[in-house]
Length: 206
Image 1 (cartoon, rainbow, N blue to C red):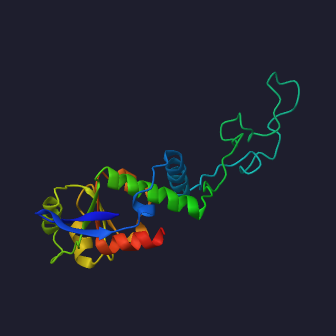
Image 2 (cartoon, rainbow, N blue to C red):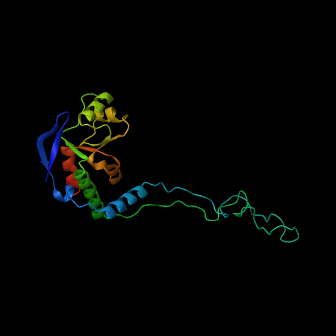
């Protein structure tokens, strides 16, 4: 299949780039995409929460008062979970929230997302996205020439001018083919990708 190349400020240039139908014309599998997105978000969780049980809280080694005759409920330690300053009854411990996703599943989900972007005309293919100077106004002007204000920009190599020009623009993220993920592809309304980056993505998902 062929994808039209957009020329900034002029619309479609009349030229196109040939891509694989297996990657950019795949049927959308909502269940697969959902599973991969959930696994990706879960993998980003820190999982470092930690609390102390009654045995880990400092102190409480001595029985606070005698067993009988005080009129109070019996107690063996002041570090009981029902006491102020005591340990937690079901203390949280560090854990890994990661979920296993097969490589084939991840590739399939990414192909389904990219195919859906093409069908919804949210994937804008350009020949290049280079800036002459590291200026934010130049980056904004380049986005406006594509009739866009926000979006994900994917280039073969993020150079200094492009990084400095776009880092302060709200609603914009700049990355390379190695840095794309399913969450960002779904989160942005429009995805701008250069021809070189498109070929690199296609090769990585083949």
